[in-house]
Amino acid sequence: MLKKAKNLFFITGLLTGSLLMFWACNQSDNNDPKATGFDRKEMLRQYADNIVKPRFAALQSGVNALQTATQTFVNQPTENSLDALQKTWVTTYETWQTAKGFNFGPAGEEGLRKGLIEEIGTYPAAPTKIENTVRSGQFNFNNFDRDARGFLAVEYLIFGKTPAELVAQFAEKNRRDFLTAAVGNIKTRVDAVVAAWPAYQTEFLAKDGTDVGSSSSQVYNEFVRNFEAIKNFKVGLPLGRRPGQTKAEPEKVEAFYSGESLRFIKANLKAVEDFYYGRGEGKDGVGFKEYLESVEGGKALIASTEAQLTAIKKALDAVPTTTPLSQTIVRSPAPVDALHTELQKHTRFFKSDMSSILGISITFSSGDGD
Image 1: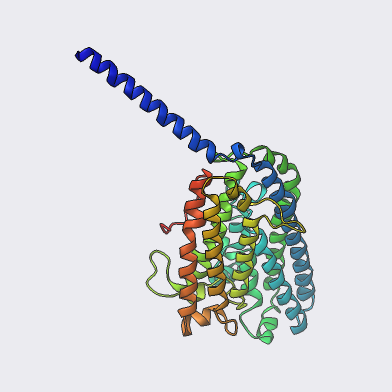
Image 2 (image 1 turned 180 degrees about the vertical axis):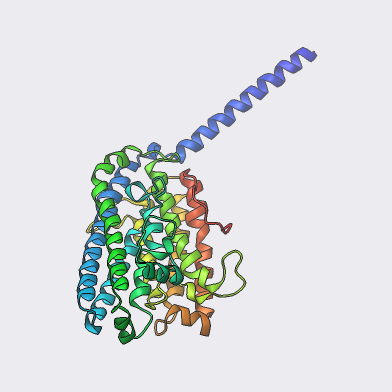
């Protein structure tokens, strides 16, 4: 009798396990885009051909214009040539906002070199390091002082004082030489990324799985990191919301010296939204939204995501544009606080729910526990 009971228990357990495995497989199939006909390679091709490469090319054109404006100013430092240089820097850095989310492949880390975003987009800039480098006349753009080079070092050099004061500073040869070299370094790094992408694209399209190291994983992680950077660093850091901060630090806004921080936040957010929808140069193609539409639970997540994106944009529009963001944080931080709250609410949709539903792991650390 005991033996029969044991056999019955074994058979029941076996059947239960089989049913559970069958259910799990069905659930897996339901959430497997390939089972529903979704083609990740088509999504990756849309990203490569109509978003990543064109936006890096646009950045390259902007950097070329920046180099030309820099050379004109260095050759003849006047208030007019400075004004032209400042305007070119603003438009080029705005273009950078559309390309900085592609920090993988040719723009990713390699050896001691960090990703392109760290090498030319680190902020806040470090004035003391920059001034020490200018005085030394020795310009090293391959060391660990990434806050003393790149776009924000150039911003520090050409903004933040009256035009007359800035022009007077550039009477110094070392200062002219450093500005020329700093812009040249940006150009060298951007040119290298643009040149490498055509060859890299074959590998990019071939790695269309969802495992760590796949193109889908790299694209997704940089997409999320690009959004998180708005919340954590463009808004949270100057507000004093980062771990270890005890008060607001408005001087740590992005683009402190030009006063254009809000403009760049808007450009960055639009770039994130465009990437989510797969909106490229002249073509609205397959993006993460279509990917989500192909899996169980995806449509509900899309609705939640889009509703919160609308809330973020509404909060962003409520931040005054008549004063620089750093001054708004000092004088009347309430709308910036409200923006940070809406950005924080959105983290779960891009970083948690989307990761879970698509089966793509988050591989970067934002350092704030979300």
